[in-house]
Image (cartoon, rainbow over all chains, first blue to last red; front, side, top):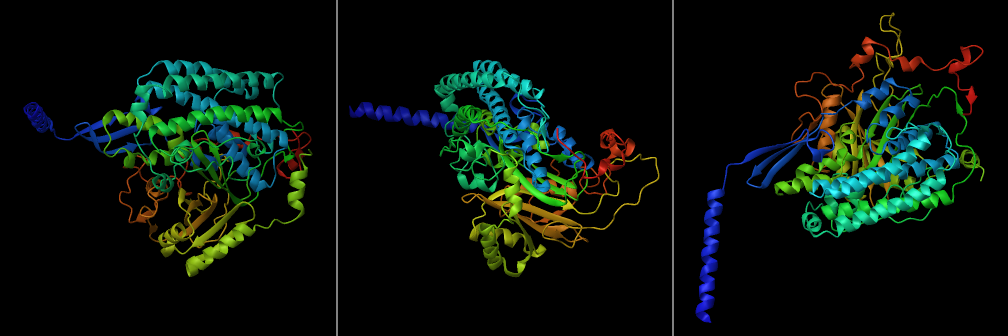
Length: 390
Length: 225
């Protein structure tokens, strides 16, 4: 017995020694890996330059600017109502949600508020764009981890939501529907019943994704414990949205500030997770999508009647002043700092987009991870290129 | 529910914001003479302007003593009125006289360029906007990177767009623009070349009112949709 165990010990020691020798032999000079600008995992043209030691990342640096369109400069030569067409294209998957904080900032400066019905419809469309946006994330997530099926489910079911947005606003991706003082139009006939049916479908989609991905062993082992962002790091990098809530910070701008919107008028839950890893971020997004379908249903139940446009001057001049309005967009905190000097157009607009902050944590986060995890981490942070580059 | 009742109530009595007034008192106590000016919009936001040389220490004090631990953004404003207008005029026509007086916004200021940033207390969800003047001669302020790591990219952006340097920043490379780009695009005296070549057609396409266009620019003309 003793002999045998000694022999086992010897075998173990020699195998360790062999491993060490192999490891020594495999030690290589560092290499630089260039991911992108055209890479399926980057939803656009984000380039990541990573310095590798074997399979491990020594440092990584995202390189932005391939899609910089200079919206902050362009706003200075547009009138206020024209700017919604620009900001639509920042986060192009949840366009309606981009318009809302800008319009709210302009309304705040003009000291007007949209009628109650317009506030309700704005909130409903806002949540629909969240569902459309995040459902694509849930499908795409699978592709980036090597599972093909979820993306077909996602593209199929997202289309129902896009159809709703299109039938209400006229645009699938770029609605340009929000107006200073209200909305362009009221909802079309039959839209409410159709929305209820689609919300049921989207909940079924969430269940499908949950059983396809989140119960999957490969998915779990590739995301659990990967890319952990502690809470204090998340705060000082200004992470927002699901990335922040997955690090255990219970903060949702829909609930935690006073805005002339309808979120505070219905009951819903803010989902958080304490792990801060890739799994937590994906899980929080899944729960939020499901929660959004409930928000939409409850808002439809209480939809008030009335006008959808308040009285505004025919030619909109915004009084001089400064306003900051941020909302909880699909990607996180999206805010506009609007400076007006009393003219037809703003003097300066600072666009605070969620992805810019969310992706600025990448150099810190990728230090020391393995190459396959780069894609997992980028996917779980979830960014849209237009939202980084503006 | 009468949709107009909300706005009517708000206009009837001037709003008080005791929470932010209290906050301003404690900020004044902590920052002392580093605080130059403040502006409070009840129920909306609080603006403070700090001395340029206390830009960094104010951030540390606010973070450590008042738990403003969430970094939202940092950027800059160029208060120079644009010498090019809004691109609404024909560039071949004779140039119109433009206002050249620099007027700063909330919480005042003395210089053409200002940096501003927003910090939030993530427990109370109350945020403030900090401003600081950037010296006219050498545009340089202290970097916040050691205070909030997230300031790194924001300062790089402000550096390339406004030409403001941040002392103590580890790596002020361009983030969007090519490294050999000349000029600072978000400064007001940087022309938007597309507008120089051709005026923006949209800026003048505002419909004239039926029956004479004289009144069309005034605020008295109201119309519902």
